[in-house]
Image (cartoon, rainbow, N blue to C red; front, side, top):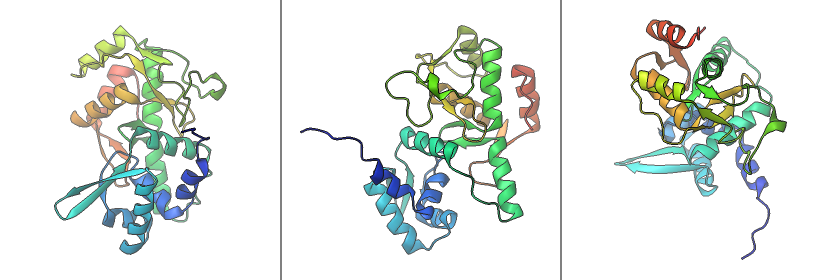
Length: 245
């Protein structure tokens, strides 16, 4: 069977509905959420979110797991997260109509979970520090899309092998109590708020896990937002020269 071009319009139609887009953004930190919470995030009724979730399931953007009487939804995988980050990078910001919304937006820009890795200014600062200290080898971290290499430069990812974790970088992960991945290629996403790269993939996931395990970051009040603890500020400054806001 001959395959035609990718049907971008079908995905675009799913994302074009604001409530569906907000539900996907709520899942962008890698969580599994019930329909009731997604309805609250999207600002719609339970019946309406059920219809939206059915369309997202049919479109392959989310998956669902049944646990007892409840059904939990999650993104279908990293490619969907990459897609959301790429779209957020080029989409205009929604108007901020309240102090609460402005505070949430600023919190997400400072530090947030981005599917299974770290995003925001903290993540960009760590990527820059890894490059400056020779823990990471590759480009300078700027978002030069003309430099994208490889056959699948999708979703704002520069290239899965564009950056490499050095031996010093592997030692830095060991110092955090983590086992470095066997594959030293490091995926880097273009951070949608900072327009520079942050570490994704296995290394990005390890860093976020260690920051959480060591209580260097904690969940903020806004979904996906992360707060850096006092211990986290001291350790990040001492180890990497990164001073969080």
